[in-house]
Length: 222
Image (tube, rainbow, N blue to C red; front, side, top):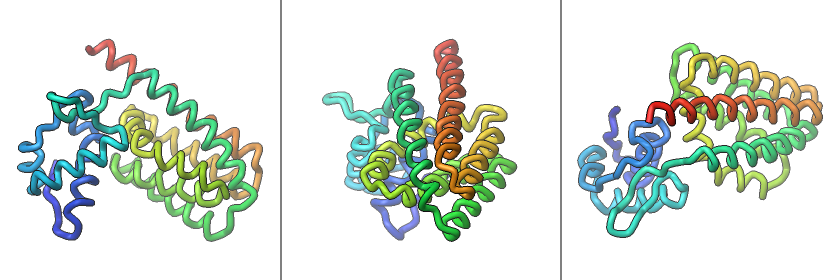
């Protein structure tokens, strides 16, 4: 994995690449993050690395323990289950609200994100799958008309992506996701709030079931 940084924005790139390395599994849950090693991998100063770690700690992707330093957060199944429960509530409601507010331009953006997602599934390009999914949901968040709901979902995004990277790695899950997102799109296109809520919740529940199997396998391997 190439972690070298382009000069356009050292601080933002440092945060982005370390975040990406964590969500992709390059750095494993529980793994210590040694500042000197990160400086060497990223080609940046210790100051940039420390600021990036501080930002990622606020996103709950890393934990900083006194006298031990930073390490990748270990997301327990209980925490993951709570995130999926909250996602189902918020994303279902956001989809229902968006069904009555979505415009043709919004649908075009969602269609583009869906097409990008489907192409990324065929290429087995996990990074593009995650970014396209985020783009798809961003339209829903913008259309739902509830800024506070959007803030909460944005606050969960890094941990949602952390979980998405694991469930999408499961054989066949990504293709199911294509069909599930298509169902959400169809409901929004028809302006059907009831169906939009139902299929959005079903999508989260399917991802949760896959994640449960992933966690079970991880525990058996341990």
